[in-house]
Length: 335
Image 1 (tube, rainbow, N blue to C red):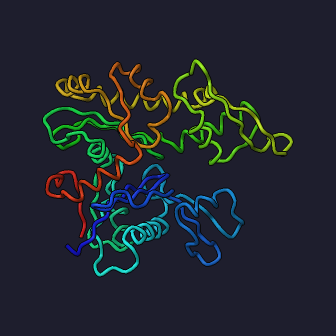
Image 2 (cartoon, helix red, strand yellow):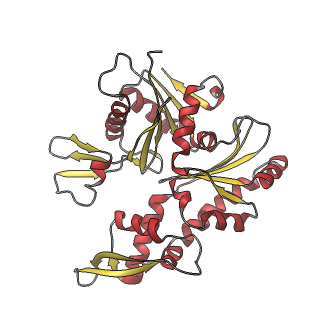
Image 3 (tube, rainbow, N blue to C red):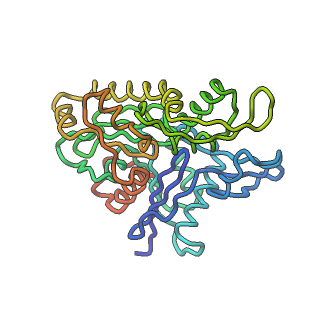
């Protein structure tokens, strides 16, 4: 009863921490600000995100995860320690059990790096579970039944597509297309079309406020401020939802191809189940306007966005951690 447990959705753009009986206790950006002079961590999460694009030469604000895997081990460890302490409070008698959700397509070396980082951050035992499984659990899909369920988890760095039956993944695919890729494509399109340079935060704002996966009958508009590429002076332009749709064409085609590939590899009986039940989408980037409709039209299978898509992986990881015996086939452990 004294052993604390925390479930972590270690995302490229956001880290969510779920604690039993308390729900989501931390939801912050996965950003760490480091001092280059003495290599110290200055800020983590929201505070560090405020610094992106605004730091002097002596400070670097960065995302330690790239495409869903650890790109900088030391800063990931510091970030995990910070979030575990924030979730459980400063004074603890025992080290917690930690479960981390990772992309289905990561290598054994990348998996080992996540376990090592969790142990170094203060975990007594670390467990790894695949994102599509926990996204499905968090979306209230009965994954233990002898029936096929398809889930697409579109996060910041990767999109995980899987068909699940009897608690395991039957066919899956992972593409490095997600929210950060969408942001970069929007910024690049605005630079090419309008000659205006904008930052990551501005392109993310454009995606959220006016972004759409399909052309809309009544386009949305918003003003964007940036730096003119020719004069170097600040300038304001009006961007429409059509601009975003145009900017994301290639990325969305790549995502749809990956979905079709997974459907192609799915056994016929499970394909019939997926046709009957439809595809469930989770992850923050699944909230892009009309994306469910686009995937539905492209595949011929109805597509729905889960309730609270951003929280599905964290909630599912929390449920799996509380019921280790039930989900033990899906879990890799280290003590």
